[in-house]
Length: 254
Image (cartoon, rainbow, N blue to C red; front, top):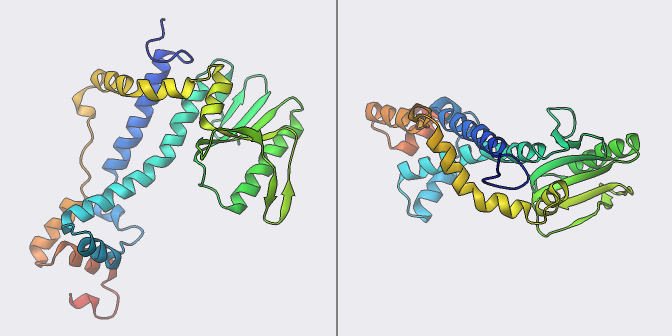
């Protein structure tokens, strides 16, 4: 079939990847009930400052906080989206929890993909280097990559340096930016740009292809909290504070 969207994966594969990400968005949105919103405790002292210093009404503030939680959940799914896209390039496959994110079918490449350059601390960086080194030592023709989709530059270079006080280097362990990794696997220098430019069209096509019943339900957290305020006559922030910290001294009398 003729390529409608990008030249390095099929139309169906791109739409499937978009569909998988859309399902992740729906799940994240539908998952924010009041119970889930309270899971990690809401910092209502910070929210009070946010409301007053930024001149935001309480309901809008809580909606923003809910969207922040949704965004945190979605970030991981964005990384998975890139894995699935790259795994659709001929000659490559995704790891499916095998210890790597992407590999060449002939075992000449292994990669671990991070969506952002700053998602690892020194311990996780050390662990990742050691994992890639094991693949490089096991497969003598394999180049192994730490992929940073959103990097601070465009690069493909040996990953070497000091991590936790130890010197690390290997002749076939690299770090690479997202644009260069897309180019490496696809053989097309502008592969990531192709994907970026076509996404609005492909997303629109995907959304037009699904039934309206698949549309996202709004999260219920704010409605549940507002229902409680009608009974308690508390403000939204006071209601959240009471429900999160009623076991604190004096908070049960709010």
